[in-house]
Length: 231
View 1 (cartoon, rainbow, N blue to C red):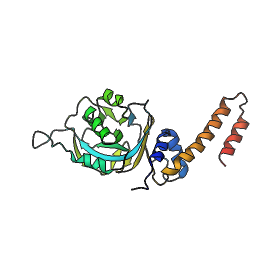
View 2 (cartoon, one colour):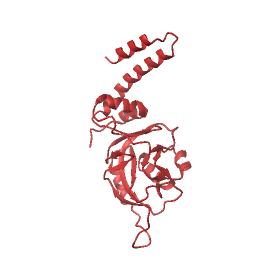
View 3 (cartoon, rainbow, N blue to C red):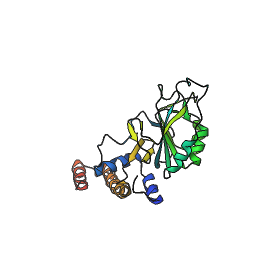
View 4 (cartoon, helix red, strand yellow):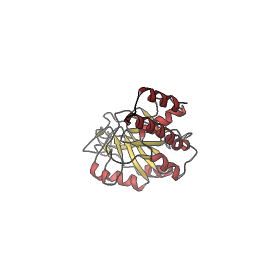
């Protein structure tokens, strides 16, 4: 895993919105521009909440069908120990690998409270969630592919292995960022340098916006400003 980041560095990353974060990561050229983020199938359910940043704790679940043997699946608690083995703050990333992803929800009021007690600052799933009012009242961000009224036959089948959520492959310990625009991973090798570059880019963007809103706007001035900022 990574060079670790301090609490203040993580907080600096959390203050950056997702679109600026994506722009800054692109500027470092460490990955292709069509990689590193979940697609539009994964939506923020509480878009008014502030951005979240944390290290991924990965879980795979199934829940579409009842067990073929006994009448119920064995409830697992060992995954809580795994969650605590990953540095905080943590984000639960749950891939539903069942035949009907999202038919039943693992993430509801009880599990949100458990995860929060274990140092998680949010959760992401390609499946479903429920008990939205309870999660929102805690200020606990949820990103999901759907909603469900039921937990159906949901059970945990793997922890700590790579998962894929909305086309984004996430490994245990990956640094993630999420806000109303979506979820993306932050390459750890550039994470500490992102806030400084974000401030530079934000300053350039504000200068362009200010010119566009000014009574003295002209295409000549806009082209000159863009050319100067790209040097």
